[in-house]
Length: 143
Image 1 (tube, rainbow, N blue to C red):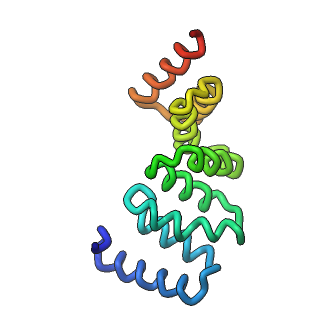
Image 2: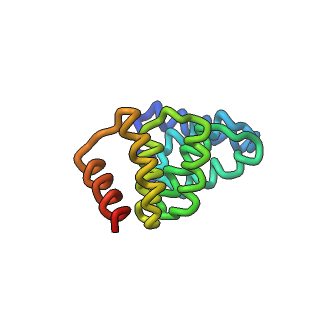
Image 3: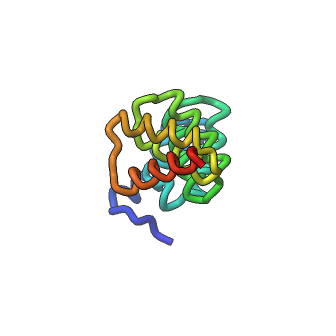
């Protein structure tokens, strides 16, 4: 199946795959390839590329990409662990806090979901769905 990228993107993907084949420990090439493949579109491939790199380096990018990929695969425990590490390394990313809130909400961890959603809101995150989820968390906390 061809990549949903233009010709330049396909060439870049091929070059990055060759770099990784020659040097499996090349963290930067792995991150760039995972971003090109997009964890929302090719989560299995992103997980296969990025997980081995965690033994070499612990960076925000690696945890964020793994969190997104596991979330797409509905591996919520793995997604939660990766997003928790990502927010430790980058406290200012509102979408990571929002995703973490979504995971906590799905696991019925309402107090943690409320805290994550509040941080996302304080960082400027806002949407109709977000406010509905936040209200749902508050409702469940009261009950």
